[in-house]
Length: 77
Image: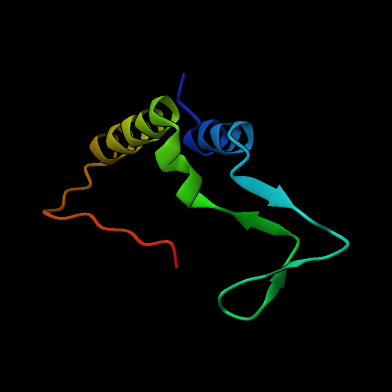
């Protein structure tokens, strides 16, 4: 059975309360747009087990899809 990485990562982010919802008072994003959903990826660093699981999923996904690179970087904004 194929792993559904999106659902697994979404569940982790919801469990650690990294995803927030506010339909009455939408969040103002860095872009200036408003959204009823905010994902605070900065929280992931505080949850070692969950962070490592997300990194394991990413590694599995890259290998399965033969995605190769020399450097990987990311930023909050």
